[in-house]
Image 1 (cartoon, one colour):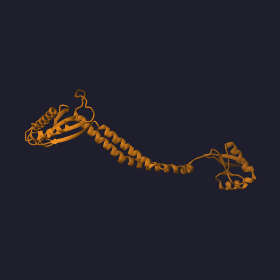
Image 2 (image 1 turned 90 degrees about the vertical axis):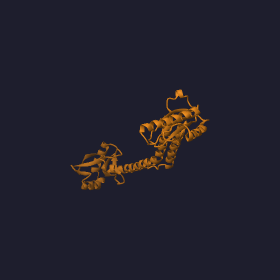
Image 3 (image 1 turned 60 degrees about the vertical axis):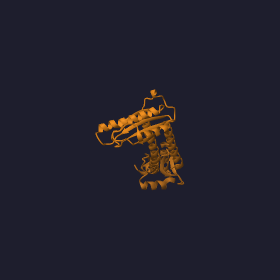
Image 4 (image 1 turned 135 degrees about the horizontal axis):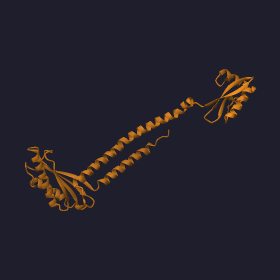
Length: 278
């Protein structure tokens, strides 16, 4: 079996991995999402003031000279009814969103939503993405910022998972494939021996007379296409065969009558396999 070039194989795996990571970097060039959690709300409070205002002002100072898209999610604790908590969380998110939109007029503050009391925390989450390419006008951007940001994060995770799968699974599949290929080739190399034994070559019996007795002499068409007789040449150095059956039949009849082949004829007749009485 031809020896496989494992160096070339591993270089191919490395090349595929590099391509995947390059594609991943290109895919996430447009926006990279960051999340900031702001606590400091008192029970039932949703107005932007105190610690909440200071944290939002810090975000504004950080993003004032950048093109960004922003989403805000509000949360409440689990004290009280869930419906009231959901409304409170929504108010916290909307007030924070409005404050950011008023301070960052060039930012794309698209949406806010409520997480209710599922997080069991009095807080808001500000998710922003810095745009590295010119930001399209809001009127021609049908997809919300939250959808775009989370889509890019999901794409990031999928591409990383795919690259890791290539690194881990490709060698395993390659090992199984080449092991099976080697086993099949070894089986194929052993098969000709079996086929040579089990093959049923074309056989014909030729009638030949010797001293008024008719005998049947076996001739066989072998894989080389020639008709082989049971006789060897006079000097017994090579088998006696002919290219076609008629020539082989003529040669057999001549050998049966030829005294030079008497010894071979007698031995074959005694064996009873290649020559027999009719």
